[in-house]
Length: 197
Image 1 (cartoon, rainbow, N blue to C red):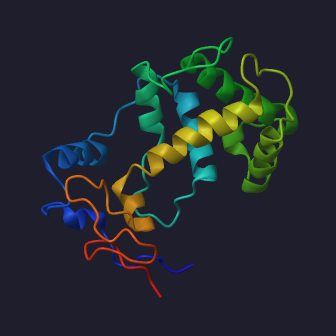
Image 2 (image 1 turned 180 degrees about the vertical axis):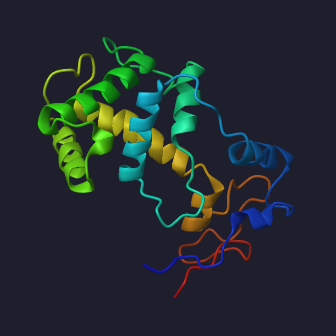
Image 3 (image 1 turned 180 degrees about the horizontal axis):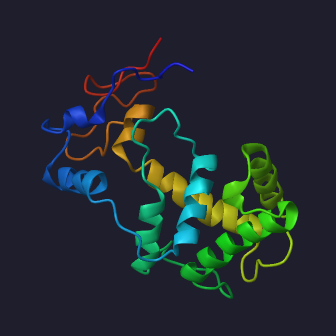
């Protein structure tokens, strides 16, 4: 599949009126201060990396967008959605339980860890979990909720907060400080990415 915005690099706006000092500071942290492991065990980290590689493949990217480190940092700092449902465990416990349950499903079905499964087996297992078909080990949060509301939601949010993903989708970054002028459908400002024909 050809690039939709060939040659576009949102970071080319670094010294333009599109980015202010606050924006540059946030982006510099995202690009240069990738957190070290503080929350997950080594096995949990490896499992989350394997899940990320399957759910958001980045094989064509020379420098994959780091996802696992930012989820780890969020949980190490006590973060999450900012709310949780009554009767559900806290986010940290949900993540540990969910990851252990995914690995438990792989072991139960295939006598192997998730990270040792091939893509077709991984895909089948994750499809079943999305449908709610799972064995024991899901106390507090079901497989569908964990997969969609925790795992996929966090991974997508982190992926699409990175400038490399912005360039990929033609996003010019925050509207502040420059703003946007041409708001009509099918029109773009001169500083926005041009879509390939």
